[in-house]
Length: 101
Image 1: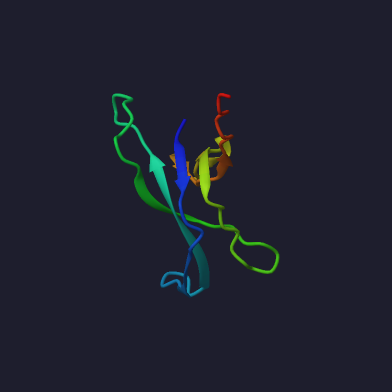
Image 2: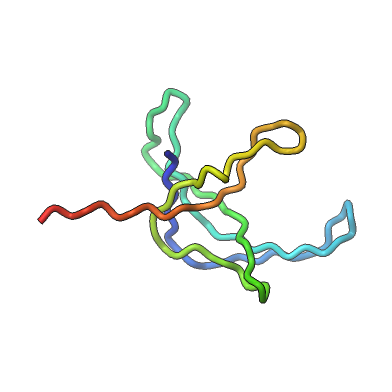
């Protein structure tokens, strides 16, 4: 399981025109922290910063992830049109651990 921490709801917007196609684009990004492992399966001591592209609602506003702890959904991993393994992060909230009384 790959744990993902969201520590801010700040959204970064990037828009412009694609050089290859000439089509306009409008993307929204949110910074997240991935708790990764090394090749031997050992958890790295510090999370790694990355950005994920956000989906939009019907009005075009970005659907940002609330602050919290998540994991990658199984639908995040797929085989692309070239036959390569690819990842498009989709998050699933982790349930808080029960506190002993």
